[in-house]
Length: 216
Image 1 (tube, rainbow, N blue to C red):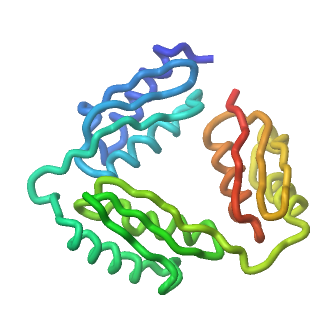
Image 2: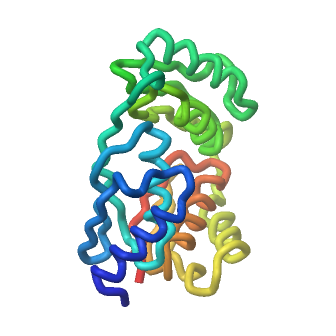
């Protein structure tokens, strides 16, 4: 088990290693496996990358990204320009269903709404706009409406977890209520936790996933 100081130092090193970040502008606090990122970044994409970098570090259980996005120079855009860029980005993203996603831009914050069939389509829409110039925040409110209701969601999900995860993660508990899945149990690191979540979201018929897993 890492001490708070060791965990903080590892996260700082990981941030410094990530080429998309200006790590000198980001402070790190660690307490009981919880990482808090503070400071200033030049884009929402950089804020996202900082959070992902922290999550990659072994021993990190959760991340609070309290980072301010401060646009500088020619990265500033008005909302109408951002909205136009968002519409084009969604139109050119092959995994985003056409005419099913709507976008609202207010003071640089993009809110996505609409409904899709799969979680990967929801993620693709967010990925399409996350790194656009001028974006300061992103709220992904797209819902998932499965094409079918699968009665064997639990069986298929458990089988998929056994195929994909390491031995420790195979002990993840799976509870299914209708199209809603709850994951529980203990996993060794954030990577295995992510694998379990992604596997649950990729199971046909799943509309929501509740993550009650712990890292130990």
